[in-house]
Structure formats: structure tokens, C-alpha cells
Amino acid sequence: MKITLKVWRQKNSKEKGQFETYSLNSVSEDMSFLEMFDVLNEQLIREGKDPVAFDHDCREGICGMCSMYINGRAHGPMQGTTTCQLHMRHFNDGDTIVVEPWRAEPFPVIKDLVVNRSAFDRIIASGGYVSVNTGNAQDANSLPIAKHIADEAFAAAACIGCGACVAACKNSSAMLFVSAKVSQLSMLPQGKPERESRVVAMVKKMDEEGFGNCTNTGACEAECPKEISVMNIARLNREYIRAALASEEDV
Image 1 (cartoon, one colour):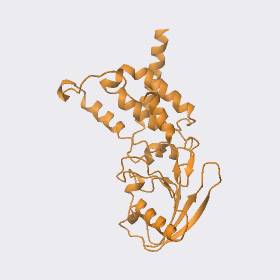
Image 2 (tube, one colour; image 1 turned 180 degrees about the horizontal axis):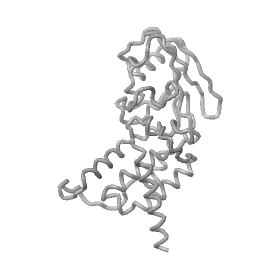
Image 3 (cartoon, helix red, strand yellow; image 1 turned 180 degrees about the vertical axis):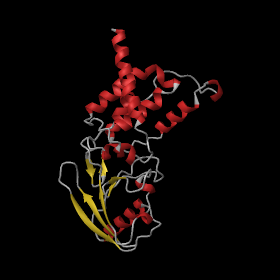
Image 4 (cartoon, one colour; image 1 turned 135 degrees about the vertical axis):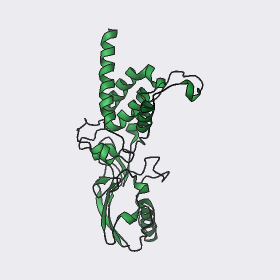
């Protein structure tokens, strides 16, 4: 396959970036998208040019680092697929592919396609954990949890924190990410003792980091590689109202 790439190049967050065009003449349809970028970088190195910086780690759709905006869509054209699991067979010979980094103020560009997503880490550090002593692991049968609750908590826990929801949202909202983490813990017994303080702290930190409000358009769910449901955002809002009412009762 012959592919033309228009790739965003930017030295750092302070300098202006621009698109640069590259041609690849021998792309296998069996390559993953990141393997295709490996080929591009090998070509650039042979030519004495600076390779394209991009994030990657597991290349198995688990770590969430392969954050690329491909032809106007977070992670590319395939539903429920991370960039690392996207293959070149989903493109056509002669295609021009435009690749950009996430576009969000809380995700400043480090270099080229790499953005700083540590804002997510700070949101998690503000309350996305269980700090109470829950004791040793119990036998599953001794800790009864309704199946539909367990299924919903597991589905929320599938969030890999890649930031596609933020990139897809016109307000750069992180509500889907935060709601998935809040839902995961608030529905299970281990997370219930801190449910009020957790949601307040995480929403506060999300706002401090500069993420926008939910647009209610559902773009986040549509582009999420793990297909996290926007129903979690509704749960987040309920949890926040619950925490506010509990705070009034304590006064």
C-alpha cells in the first residue's frame, strides 16, 4: 500500500506546530497503525531527520497511551478500538491520513503527538481510590453483590484513561473518565465508606485542572475505545447531589 501521512509536528508546548507530509510506499495491510509509524520513523532516521514522537507501551489496548487523533476521530475510524489495535487494512491504497495529538488545554503537547495527561493522574490522586482498611481478601461467596451491580462496576472499571473522551468533546470535558472511576468504586462495598468525599474531591480537582462541562452530545461514549457508557455521567451527578445533601445534613 502507498500511504500519505500528514503528521502534526511540534517541538514543545510553547512553540507553534505545523503539519508535515510524508509518503510511505510499502505499507503492509497487516501492520498495526503504530507499526506503520515505526516504519515511518525508521525512514526518517535513515534520512537524518527527527523521528515522530508518539506515546505507546503495551500495544494491546490496555495502557491507554496510544492517543492519536486520526482523520478527525480519536483513535481512528474503528469503533471500540485503540490506536495500537487499529490495522492498516482499514485504510485504502493511496489514502491520505491526517494524524494529530489530543486537542485540549489540560493536555498540553510535550512533543509532536505526545501530550501530558498527568491531569488524569492528579484527579485519581484526589480521591479515586479506597483508603479504608478493607481487610484480607474474602471468599467471593461471602461478599454478596448483585450480578447487575458487579457487571456495571466491571464495565466502568474498563476505562483505561486514554483521554479520548476529552479529545472528542467540544468542551474538553473529562466527565466520562471521572464518572467511570467514581462509578467503579461507589457501586462496590469497599468504596461506599468514602463515596461522598470521593466524588466531591474528584469533581473539584477536575474543575481545577481546566476540563470543561459535559455537552450531553455523547461524543465521549462514541469515541471511547472501551465504550464506557454515558450512564456513568448520570451516576456521577447523582453521587454529587447525594454528597451535597449529606453535607447539609451534617451542618
